[in-house]
Structure formats: structure tokens, C-alpha cells
Image 1 (cartoon, rainbow, N blue to C red):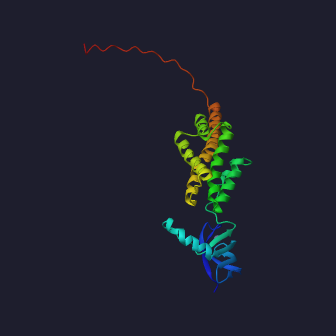
Image 2: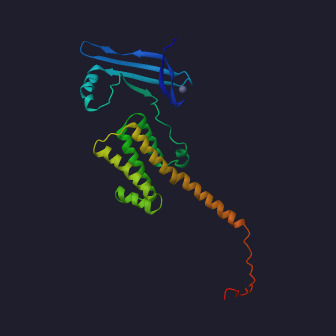
Image 3: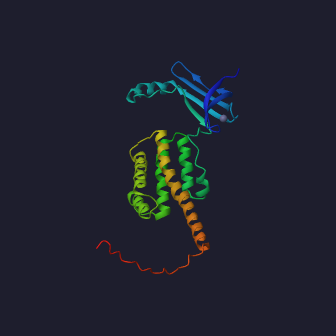
Length: 245
Ligand SMILES: [Zn+2]
């Protein structure tokens, strides 16, 4: 019976059993060092999706990690460093991005952030998210000063609310910290930042555009609706009630 292994499947969008269809072992074992280097083709037993994996482990590097792991409580040393192609997707890019942001550099930047994120290039992902906000500001209000001024500009033009501005400021600062202070955020934190960015983009490019269409429809309906005729009200004399006097 073929050996199976639980691996995330991009197509099934969950962990599924995979079989190893082919495996080439390039490992090198010497008295000083052990390097495991294995190249494999895996196939999902659910949907037959195929992917490639390189499993790598260098005992010297493992020893170094072992020495410094005490500085990071809870950190567990992985047995192998696994790299997948295509990369395992953390989540799918929302479908409306291609529809509403075709030929827009924002769409390209989002594509690159997803690619960095799925490849665990987390510094680049943080910086890329900041770039998305910059591109949005430049498109909507122009290249006007620093990020604080740009976000104020977005709020002044009513693209975002005060609450949304605060959220975006946090994400911008996360990108600044990655670029200037070597702050590397976790994959989960990148996902949270993407939640903030995508909600804002969806509001500006999808929901606002839908609302404008509905405004136009309402105007057309208004034109086709007969106006109410103005009628004069008959004045009726009200008898004074003197009973209270
Ligand atoms: Zn699958």
C-alpha cells in the first residue's frame, strides 16, 4: 500500500491525504554533517492535484537553532524545511479584485503581496501591503506628502471614515517597521492586515460603485414616476369652543 501524508491542497482548500508519486534523494551524510535533501512529487487523493516539494535539513543549522530557541519560548524546531511549488496558498485572492481593478497597479501589488505571503516572505508582504495603501492614495488624491497627510486626504474626500483611517494607519506603521526596524510579522498577522486592506478596497471599488449604480437607477425611476398634482386645501372654519370659558 502506498504511503500517504497529510498536506494542504490548494484545490481542495484543506489538508488532505497525498501520495508520494516520485522521490529523488540528494542527501549527503558525512561524519561532520547530515544534509537531507529530497525532491518529491505529491498527488492529492481527493482531487488528484499535483505539487512538488523539496525537503531540506542541515544538521549544522538545526544545532544553531537549538542553541537560540530558548530565546523564543514555544518555538519548535521543524524536522525539515519544506518548500512547495506551487506554494501552499494561505487563502485565495478575492474574485472581485480582477473584475474591479483590471489594469490597475493596485491589483499587481496585491498579486505580489499574495505571492510573497504564500512563499513566507513576510518582510516583503508587510512592505507590499503599505505600498497598496500608497498606490490607493496616489490614485484617489495624488502624491501629497507623507502617509499621515495622504490618509487625512482620503478621509477629507470621504473615501474612508475616521475609524478606517485608524486601521490603515496601523497597517502603514506595520510596513514602516518591516522596512526600517526589521519587524517581521507572523503569517496570521499578514492575513489580518490583508483583511483590513481588502475590506477598504472592496468598499471603495465595489460597494461604492454599486451604490452609484443604484443612485442612477433611482434617478431613472424618479423620472418615470408621475408627479403628484398640487391641490388647494379648502379652508374650514373651526368653531370656537367656549365651553372652557
Ligand atoms: Zn485536493
